[in-house]
Length: 321
Ligand SMILES: [Zn+2]
Image 1 (cartoon, rainbow, N blue to C red):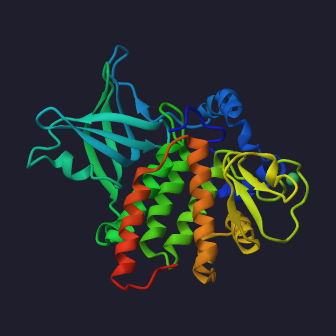
Image 2 (image 1 turned 180 degrees about the vertical axis):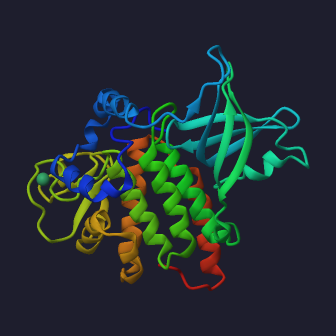
């Protein structure tokens, strides 16, 4: 997870506007650390705009509240309990214990599988909140019945978690994850959709790669093959390419066009897009390394996704878009 969010609460409907605003004021990923350090103000302010869905039952310590959430991860606690991590719209990342969730007849446990959109009731605790009730809003069955889609869905969850923090509203990211999982169930271009999602998540949080102009000298990029620097966070022009000692990735003209297109396209348009395997690989590598650079973490489920995808290819199934 990032330590803070630059813009976490804008509704998804504002993404287009946000993208154009961000393009005009594109923060250089060089300054990610300074963005983080300045980041508290926007989401503190916006936390006043988002209704608090907690319902105080007492004025003392324990409070009962309800919230929606997507289950991002869980791990076992003691004999029969489970700690659940959710992404919620009002509180961002929420960790809570589901007592007895691993008992065979537990109603709670069955509702709190990974990647499920749920509605929960919980009570605040001294260390951890405790989930008392959970109902499934959407279980995304098509993702669970296909290993390939499952690996992609888990990747979306982990990716989104990397950009969320505890106790900070994340309505935009929550909506994007719920809608994204639903779209993934029937997407004709799941690979390209993941790239679209990565790009939108970066923009939503103010960490987009610099793909319009040279990341160093700010000159307009000529329409030719260039290189991308993960450490500098953008495309370097031929003059600036040798100035750093950092590792550079190839970025063909078509790849740069695709990156720019992903930033402004709607996901419905992706199904009709024709992209060569080379450009697809370059785009994936650039966005994955950019995400890793700004979050300072690798996405563990990406390795699982790659493994499933290579098995699918080895079995001779056609690669989806
Ligand atoms: Zn330059």
